Length: 67
Image (cartoon, rainbow, N blue to C red; front, side):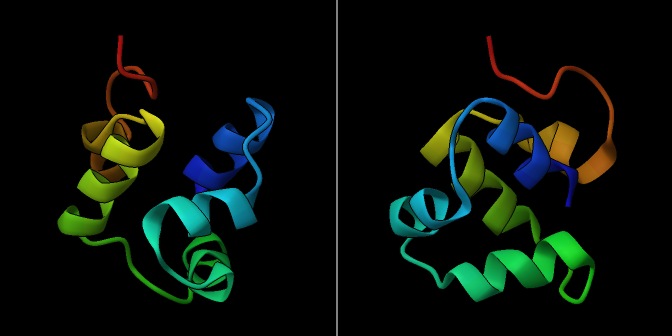
């Protein structure tokens, strides 16, 4: 998933994201590799936790980061 790469560019590690979201790092790995699909609900959780735009996550449109 492009979002994980974007977050790493900002210095946020996958293990930190998992802790913030209360999920397993392996789940994020599965999202990143395409083995799992990103739901709208989880996209919103990512948006709230780290500020990445849920609309961008789901559609690829707009700015990846919330203003």
